[in-house]
Amino acid sequence: MASRSFELESVDLLAAAAQGEPGQRRFFLVARSGAETMTLACEKFHVQGLVTRARQLLEERELAEEKEVTAVNDPPLGEPDWAVGELGLGYHDSRRRFVIVAREVQPEAEGEVEGESEDPPASLLEPGELDEPASGTESEAATARVWVTPEQVRNFVEQAELVLAAGRPTCQYCGLPIDPAGHPCPASNGSRPVF
Image (tube, rainbow, N blue to C red):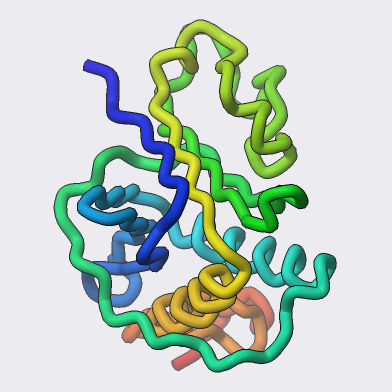
């Protein structure tokens, strides 16, 4: 059964969320437009990448002005609609809005070696290029397009950074996460755990 696709033109809420203990957390992207709520399961690197790209676009477009950020409470989480495979962010000049474009994760096609896809990653695509899937299995993949204002993107960045920071602390030497039992730090050649 095909998953549901989303086209949210005007959202009331855009937030990142995480459930679970640090080191075992599951991440989500949540958007709400009126009575319609979209919850997408994603990886931590998706949220980190979205935050990084949002900051870049805000600066490039000179939209990073300092305004008071509206606090976002923890978004209500239900069962995720689907899991994100590709995630991108762009800015539409004539609409003066950002668009987040997501595509559902799909199992590898038979005979296709991971990393040898002829399609560019979604982060390199223009928003309109995800409208028509290029290959057979991707035609079944659900997509989501979420249109948000620069202010909503600034709020999302601040809120998502708080969610990301609530995880495991990072090692000051190598930048990897430190588990409660420590971790074998590559900077110390893994000879003793760093706590």
